Amino acid sequence: MSAEPWPLRLWLGGTLALPRMAEFALARRVHRGQNSAPARLGERLGRAGLPRPQGRLIWINAASVGEVASVAELARDLMDEGNHVLVTTTTTTGGVRARAIEGALHQYQPLDTARATRRFLDHWRPDLACFVEGDLWPRLLAETSARRVPLALFNARPSRSRVRAPRLSAAMLARFDLVTTQSEAVREEIVSLGLPESTVLAPGDLKSAAAPLPADPARLAALRAEFDGAPLWAAVSTHAEDEPAVIKAHLAARERHPGLRLILAPRHPDRGETVARALEQAGLGVSRGETPGQAEIWLVDRLGETGLIYRLAPLVFLGGSFGPQGGHNPWEAAALGAALLHGPRVGNAQQAHAALDAGGAAREVAEAQAFGDAVAELIGAPELDTMRAAARRIMSDRGQARPRTLAALRQLMSERVAPDDPSSKAVQ
Image (cartoon, rainbow, N blue to C red; front, side, top):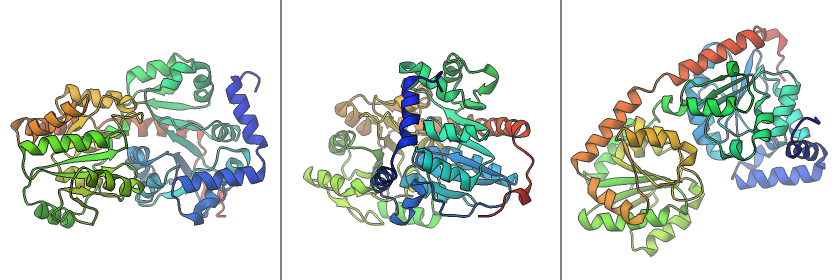
């Protein structure tokens, strides 16, 4: 422990000593903050809500909906090869997406305390533990590693923390037996921290290789009929910092396109009432129903509609890019042939946005005026069709990340994971 950086030693010490009442209060606060079902509070404390199946179990820890989506097909691959898969998430939206992976088990991630993580690991006894992108918790990693469970990190992305705190990052990453990265540049960054080159691979961005988001064909046809050919665009995964610019852009663009309609889907559906008020204060008619009706703005403040939206709207603004969130995954929209607009702050998906920008499938809009001009210029224009075709072309070339990641996992399991013996894993 003495070789660990002091912030890591402090965290591990604090999470070991946390009193039971404080732990419970923290779990309840986290659970309530994520709007999770009250009956599942125990999962935050490591109390399992499901029995452990017999046989080999692969645990995938994915923070939220984007991370779950990036590994959904990989999880299916692993189950097709005879493994059980447990997906843990920190958010409710991630949980909804995880439960949509047929055959996978879902639990909420336990608190990063000694008691909660030990209780979780005692029950689930994973044969392999996989973490997605960068949601790394010191106690969870330490307890898993102490049990000699092989650790893999998927789809590592650029990280400011690796630059600001290299010793801390190196100590956390050193526990992993396999790290896969979104790009060669991220691989070089991680290797420079002292990790063996043989354990860090760059198979590509899993998010770009994910299957297209689903949509019900009958509902899609009904919605297309309801919009009835009106000029249409969408703003998806928006936050409070994005929405003023979205409103200004729509008001500006509709001057050139009478009848222009907007589908607006906030990143967090529980903000629907706040967003609706802002739209109404701007003089915009709003529908919050299952269908848009005749309203100018269809506010989609519920989960599971994104696949429909990307198929309906030829032009999509992706939120999280005017505020501190750092942008969101653009590959889902591109996979369904949508042309993209985004703000300047996309550090969490910098390389993905850069690739789509460079390929002509996306465009950065620096502020509200440029945003409105871009929407007005693109709606109904030949350039919009050119951008959409570029998105499809780019996505057709990006299919190798998943098979390469799966091959690396197979290699790790052949070296570190015991052959599957169902009788050795009793159901609890």
